[in-house]
Image (cartoon, rainbow, N blue to C red; front, side):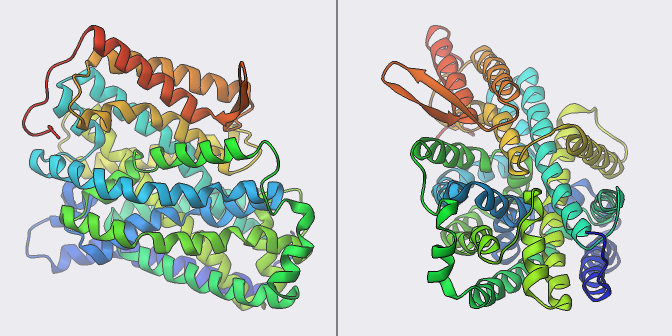
Length: 484
């Protein structure tokens, strides 16, 4: 798209730049208003928001992690390309909410009691192993890079759809994210997440009302898209279910989702949010429908990531299309900042020695993480943008035994968990490489055959190895702090 629409570009720049400026100014304003000297330079402030977020902020920070470029760009693009199969993102969110309600308050209590800031801190306290701490930290660091890469793709796609040429969209995406994270810390995405969500609510609710009016209503919508698999095709049920299950297990193992949990004020805050989080799934389903609406509106493209921007630009007037594109870009910017901060916390807390200026070290680390994500964009040739997030899921699922099973009254040994991690990581990444970054792998076991989530295969293998070795050589019993 070489044509630049000045109205769309102007509205986009206004809302996108305003969000960056507001977020980047929050930490500075807090420092001026706070009676605590240099509170803005505290690593606890920059990386965890002072652990003071109540239900309102936590709602937008934790729930907002589900409204990223994954949701607004990648899911509709998958639905546009493969049909109903792309809706696996809906059941996975429903599965994960009870998990949040039951497990995350316990993790918060352990972290609060021990002053832990990361998953690696919690694992070290549970198993007393520096090696396991390093492994968990490195896994989180690597897993989040393709996820941030997906957000960069989202911002780049939007800027590209506005007509800016060449590599300029990717440069804008990277620089805006770097500046937003460097200056604002966790308070920036936490306190601008409500702007992001409100913008997305407006864009989506208007879209699902207006676009069907242009295409003859919802009945006509499903009639016109009958050739694009509005129901699961034969053989898609198993990969659909296993992708949903593995995505649910992975969702709150990522460093950025745990950062939002650990920044909460109390365990009750987390439980309250878990009760109301299903509201997000309703809007998520409407967003996924945009893939079908694009077909009904006559959108034709070989670049699936451009489906939603092209749809908005075709149906809406220029000024509102610019607003919708800004909502998508902000929807990628805010969670990407939390992801970079969560990864930076792992590096500064668990991988590097104590720093004289931990905030500066975290800022530099977050910048390097974003550079790693940029390399993922440039060198990982994923067919669908969503595959980058699913690749991160394969990696982060290998921390499930250490972090989640470590909460149970099981005498798991460090050697067992390390062995399971090695085998699960090698198998998971090996299968991804063999399958061209596809998130599913064909399994043929006698009468059973079908495509199964690669993340689920590798995690199950990991768990079997951990349990088998721990039965032969049990680890130490729980201490009082981490016992269920």
